[in-house]
Image (tube, rainbow, N blue to C red; front, top):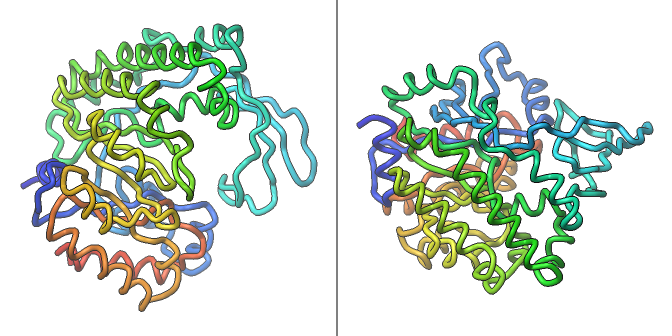
Length: 371
């Protein structure tokens, strides 16, 4: 079986002899630490998303269609000191970012969000103009050539990229986390309009790609929960999100895309039954600090919910004994059941040494029959 065939079999909840070796990538601080610890940089692509031969991370690809604003906002520094930068970014959001500790473009802490582009119906009308799904440059200039190459691929292909499209996440980007939480109650008509617009935009934009390529999976990026639970409850989900999720997923499944992923940090357990009802059947990366234990989730939801991730990054940082304990309590049993792809529960943090990461990768490859 090809890698693609094995991937599709796993996405149906089945056991396979070959299991992909995936990871999400690593912080800039982690990269610098590993360089200092002797990683052979002349052999590194630092491309975890599509495959990294040095770590035997397997190839997968993405159709990088542009769903962002066109035109984007011009990046504009509003204030800068020795400690921080306040700037408006290409998505219209104004943030305050600390300079200290920034390495290779990765900050040591999240930016503080000061302002978002949508505040009311008037500002929403201005933002809508930047989302024309028929703008030609939304598709890569070499799209036709890429389509031909994908016809003979033996690896899985995702429609759009990771961290690209979501329903709640787009509302949050337009309005802000706190503001959208109020808007669900204070201006539900505007929320419904934004969700309908975003759904129409996506479906119109993707129609060309769905006609021309057979994709293997689609990923919703939401990040809609914290350690204590989701940022909205089942009632809000049903009122605002169920219908647009179903519209999108129905079209994807009509095009033969039967593996629908949800990407969210935090504890989303309360929302999983609703996502599954909408047609989502894979959850990742299963943040361990929020209690998203893949063994527990498998017992609760069965193999109708495919699981990816769930290996505690903080345990990987502690050394060989902790790595072995973490790996053996999760990977063997889940692989025996099928419908599981093991990887760290988010990007690789700088607490993880090069030596410990290599030990983790080697042990994972042994357990998956790759070494």
